[in-house]
Length: 225
Image (tube, rainbow, N blue to C red):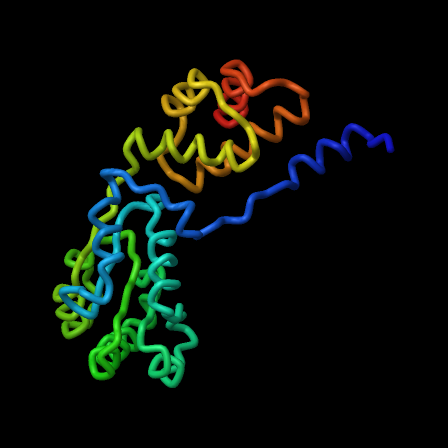
């Protein structure tokens, strides 16, 4: 079957990789070693209230979802909180809790409830909970007493491993020169790296070119303009 070139191009650019939070896809390096060790040490935590924080794209949700699976936890949304379900599962995950600023009162009661039922609460945040001012003194106190666990920005070792893994998942063996070039030019955000690798792969297929430094340079030129 012959495809119209515009249709063929559209097919390539509609290909998206679904995010995977599998444990096998989580790469450990110096930037996330401490956070990984702490979460894997569950239930031997210093407190039952933990905040995993760091910049966007450093792997907070990935690591939190690994814990979610290991602890048979329940991921909840403060907008539709069901304390009956919380009591059944006891172990709870809230992603980006600081964005729920209109539900801070509910969060305060949830933290207290988790303590009463001897459960565990893991929250992710872009902000160190110690520096967060919610306007509710008792909640601020609870957050300051939580165990803060930081994930640092990905180091070069981790970013290189992620780039290799992303291409490997597409059955593409990538040249070391291309990897170094991507590291030099790309954002250090893992979600943005995923988007970049998809763009590189799509352009390679569309133009029937190998993945080389010139092709990747063209991608960055397109992005910057």
